[in-house]
Length: 91
Image: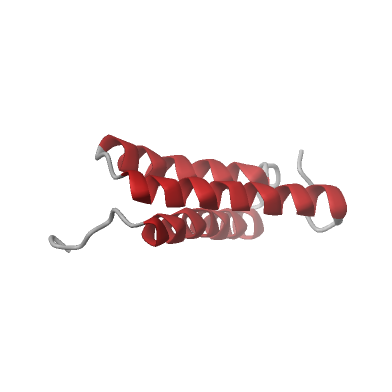
């Protein structure tokens, strides 16, 4: 991993898509195994701040662009599901 170049747009895009999926999987396990019932699902998008921060700290701007693009994609998906379907209730 030492010679791996993290400064690619597609790697940032993959990290930005994978991070909320992993956090939502943890959220799903917590809700259905422990009984915690109230959490805003759209907060999973906020976990993209983690790779965003690291890309910005190490000045890897191409990867940062990928994370930002995936954040906008996730935001559009959340808006679609919350306003146009009954599958996701925010609030």
